[in-house]
Length: 261
Image 1 (cartoon, rainbow, N blue to C red):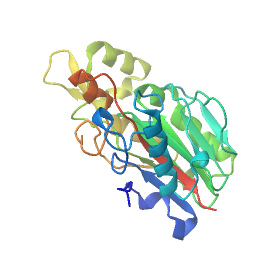
Image 2 (cartoon, rainbow, N blue to C red):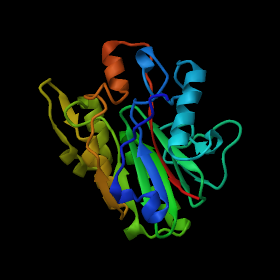
Image 3 (cartoon, one colour):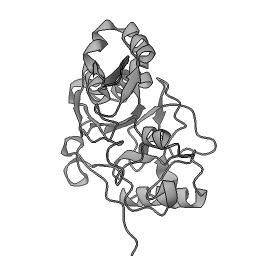
Image 4 (cartoon, rainbow, N blue to C red):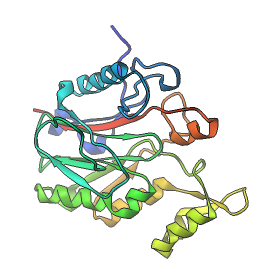
């Protein structure tokens, strides 16, 4: 028997036994990739051996009791765009950064390697969502748009639980002055998500708090696992860690959710 994935779970999103919702914030554990992609790399856009990526994705789907064909991911581009999924996708993956569905048996997933993966659930309505949000997507409105799309499928805003999975933490997300000015230029109240850095003209961004605040602004119940991708190399891939090491590429983990049949 191979080493199986061991996804993290939040009781807030529900469970198969309780309300037919299954999910997982997957780590690197349980995959077949090696080298810089060691573990459960599901990034089709990486330069990893694509046979390994396919097997890793199959293991994710198997963990959530669905065939690989029913694991749906999109081509993430830091956009505010949300797609409603009613059946498995075929052909080229559409460009978007979030999905919602009310169709049982389909797994929707968000890939990440520092940006925020957010899973959404309204078990009473049988509506779920998965979003990828870094600072650009969060400012651009992808989180509110995901909630709106769930409401269109019958979810109730005040019933929706949204959980932020493994994301780069406030002790490791240093940004320059130009970034800071651009960020607070969209809303001066965003200053509260920064603190001073030890390096001149730099600041530390609390992406956990920022994403959680944007979710709360959208009217849902929001929480965070508060797990840092940069700091925990054993469990998570990190784009910024790879960049600092000048490595040629990086893997991606997945956070995924499904309505069981």
